[in-house]
Image 1 (cartoon, one colour):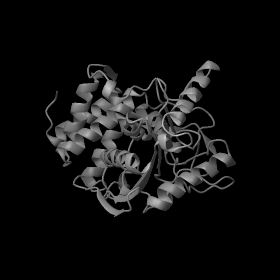
Image 2: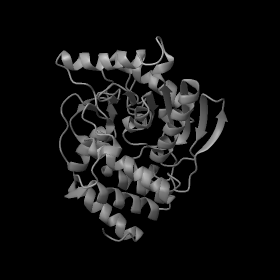
Image 3: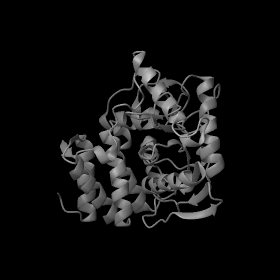
Image 4: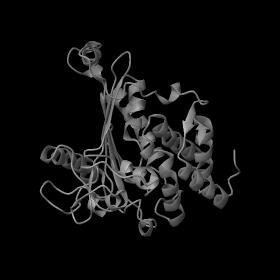
Amino acid sequence: MTETVASAEALASGLLTAAGMDPGNARTSARCIVMADVWGIGSHGLMRLPYYLQRMAAGGYPPDAELRVADDTGPVVSATGGGGLGHWQLWEAAGLAVSRCRRYGIGAVAVADSGHCGALGLYTVPGLREGLLTLAFSNGPAVMPPWGGAKPLLSTSPLAAGIPARPRPAIVDMATSAVARGKIAAHAHSGTQLPEGWALAADGTPTTDPQEALYGMLSPLGGAKGFALALLVESLAGGLAGPNLSADVPDMFTESDAPNPQRIGHVLITLDPARFAGGGEAAAKRLDRLAASVEDAGGRLPGRDRVLPENVDPHTPLKVDDGTVRELRQWAERLGVPPE
């Protein structure tokens, strides 16, 4: 089914508000959810909304959760999210990181006790708007074994970076597993087989069955080096922010886990290029040159074609999976949200 960006945002916002969220937080979350679809990351877009709503109804994402500052040194802020949905919380944190970066040259904001935040690269956008470089890290349910092991220990350990090159920024957004778990969920949702090499069943044997993989494990990207990178992400998101390490995070896709807050950790680090060697425009110009050299060599700058939210035409058509549409309509009926 084809929606528009505006109608999809209105539906998502209406559902989240009806589920008990503050209307402003619901609108921010809806925008982040739909932007994942706009960016072609459907595994983190509207497909996830029924799972969010299920967890909210069961208590796993308290809809009235608040974002509170627990400690503030100026350049470093530690906040706690009360177990709530992560999208609006991390968006607020990104804005806070930008303001602190403008003052100190660096802004590091940790959000503890939060929920899934969708496409991590979105939270580099506030920094990119101001010409700042942002790094983002998050954790989630354990699905990745240690290299050489056979027990889930780490999440997909996603990381993102927004690099303020001109005329267009680079946006890196990646899992450190061989594939993002949301892609496994998307295949399970559509009933299509997985490519070989993506996943392992719970007993550690390779599988192309998306249902087996969803409750199994994912291999680290690039073997032992990928696991080391994933361990770094977990050290930042789970170790510094927390409070849960990935091994303790309830699984969004397991219905029996819906009442249990995930208590995910997120960390954002925003840097001002003007505070680095050469001062003023020197670092910014080096970043511009670096980005240009990628394309001059015949390469493709990561995230080159990702439109920033403020540049998205609200009338842009948005293809939504029929199964997702059915689930959202059921939730609309359940929550008393009128059709658009």
